Length: 57
Image (cartoon, rainbow, N blue to C red; front, side, top):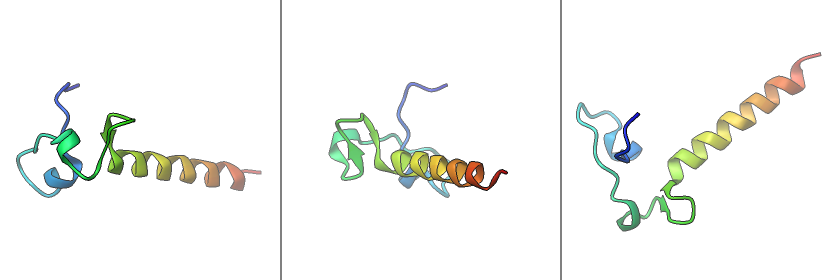
């Protein structure tokens, strides 16, 4: 696993990954030390898992 943070927004659809600008980026969450897109995606996965578990008899 790479220790260099990659920007999920700027890297999307590109052949070359773009390094995260961290605190210079509006999407960067300083308190969490990560991109807000990662947080949104993580929360969406947890929500999907919860909905799937609720449907299981």
